[in-house]
Length: 385
Image (cartoon, rainbow, N blue to C red; front, side):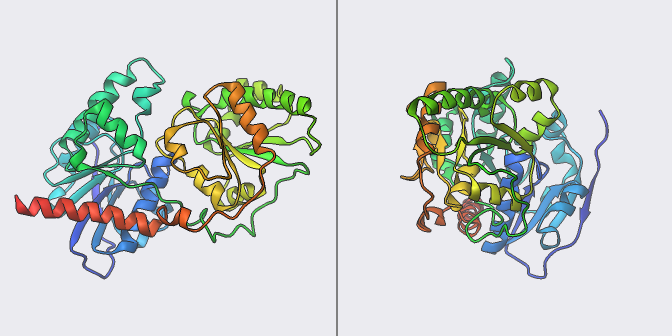
């Protein structure tokens, strides 16, 4: 096994907070968990009371918005590896810290300080890509939630699944939602974003990846059914397009088979990955955002669209239903036809201003304060022992 190395980079802020927090940031820039880590650190810094150190690579550190506000430990251990599980704790100077927070369900063995684990979903168990995923994921997740001093679930549905499917202890389980990124939330600007070259209305679908539970094939089939239903309903409005964006859409651009599949469907456009300013413009200009997922632990695109006044069309996924408003459309069931019907209903939805109260609990500052409350609880309980 290749020997990994760690290097402690001292670039601490001037203040000396009480709690010395170590955050595993090795998945910064890696889809939804990467966004979670970014907003987590921003929230904890805003809340105060912690001296934050983040484990990541040099490249990851250089790309964050808080590079100079935290300390860094540079480590090249791969996430979800045997090295991470068994040898990670030997290289990291845990004795210098009071608490360790890992943002996914792999908790390395041998960590000598209190730990907090965030579990986003049970996708690897409920919707596995490979036959052996459930066995491995269940073992790792059960181990993590059993050994951790506290477990954060990002939705009430995930919390309930952890209790029913994993046997998590409700006493150390905390619901703290994801935070909406400041660059995509209320008040964010998109004035300099390039405009979409499209004269007709469009539905937007944000794909973080192409895993089966994200529903790419379903939304393509539903789009074709939607076109037929629209003609039958004799809708007078211009025929819309379906625009696909995100890292998942970027993967489509490098997959000839998928490109060929999509080229055969009228009215589908693939833009690939875009920056946050462009994404916000796409949200604001869309007729609705379509979320075809079969399962989610949370759903930031739903909140981001709502922040732009754009209706959400989704399937009856429990975690997404926790976020929807009266102006959104939830399909009657998980079938393709139901999704197409929901899209047809979304065609008639108007843009609205969603009340600020809907977003309050998802702000970086509020979420950061809630996470710090969990840290404080763990620290207090540890000091009593």
